[in-house]
Length: 107
Image: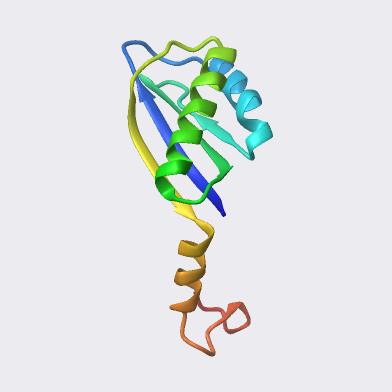
């Protein structure tokens, strides 16, 4: 199953645009995006294949750490991790009542 995992590391200095661009390049192969310019943290959202949310987090942490290293970012502690799996998204779509859709101008 595919999982989207968002991670954030926090530290003691401001992150520059160039560093976020490098991080974005490093996570691109994992369907990733990066953030953090002008803050004392940097983050990424990446897609990994795993059986469980816990396994997805383990894989994502390794990918994130390698990407941060490749981008030349400091190895700051990870302060936030969130996961969202394909099945969780499917459950959300099942909660939408019948008859409501884009053609109705609703959502």
